[in-house]
Length: 90
Image (tube, rainbow, N blue to C red):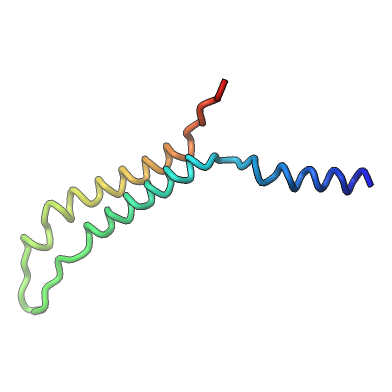
């Protein structure tokens, strides 16, 4: 009987104490959205005519500079959200 009671207590308290708080999961979702936005910025640059090459479109500021910075910022934000320690309520 004591074992059954202990298992029930573990199940009841297990749902309340996650390793990462709910706020951190929300921040991780925001970070994943930033990463997704960075990859969306990289899309494009192709040409319908394979005989024609448009270097200005292919090597634009958005694809070469802005998109990788956005992706790296998203990864840094996700890392911060995982490592963030929740504030203690007094």
